[in-house]
Length: 335
Image (cartoon, rainbow, N blue to C red; front, side, top):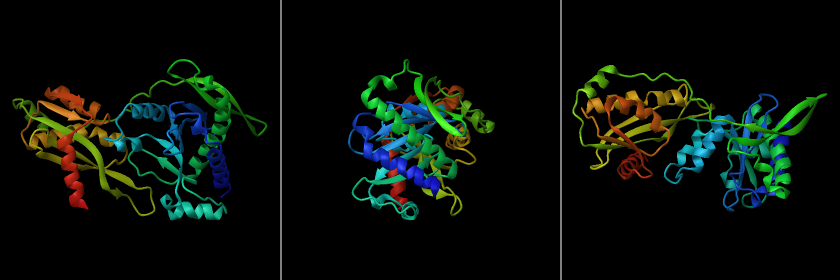
């Protein structure tokens, strides 16, 4: 409760100071966790007056995931937000909070009134539902919010504070332990894109060789990976998402495949199975497509591996109308 109390007090002070009135979400700075050394890259949301929140994107993966989100049409691929590791506090109406959220607030004897006044803390990890903060996350996020208060107050009078140089350089708050007291100071840190995670990519060679022996058709497919409406995991544990990988004829709307995938043991390892799953689906239909269209940035590198072997064209589209029709039909049937 002591850790929660300190975190809530920092969130209350942020809500009172309203830094979204002078900062936008693209003015990023970092806070290094004194315990783990991990840097959380902070974004202030709410400059448009619609949704007030502070997010801490975890490490270079979170930072570059954030910049990828800025370039995407999130209206058509909102699920991408959940694939970027982050800790977040948002300020919500009471009705949005769960009984577990409200229990902590009651234990701390805190009072909130009005719309958009109730702090709600969530942890985001690829492949998982947004979930309650764990003890190490509470401590790390407390450092983030307390240092956010210090940075945004200075940035209000010094707009250049968060523009330390080139596109890869960021102001980062770093603590030094001096006699048991943390003393924070500014550093400028260059952050390069993360190295691709090493993951095995299995393949069904019988299916692949069958497809290589087929003539190329004139069929263009729309392929997408999206959340399946359901949860995986034991009661009380952090639930995982199930994903459905759909392959739909871009002309007729015929559904060639809808494969259910699980992000177990990790989301990236699940993605590594996608070329094999698609190859098996195509082999069942004896179909070697001319083109595969995707919307999600996530799918591109994995399907390019298969495209290099089979010679089909890969294109990214913001709209996949036939696939969206098929997915809407699936969701309607499930509900």
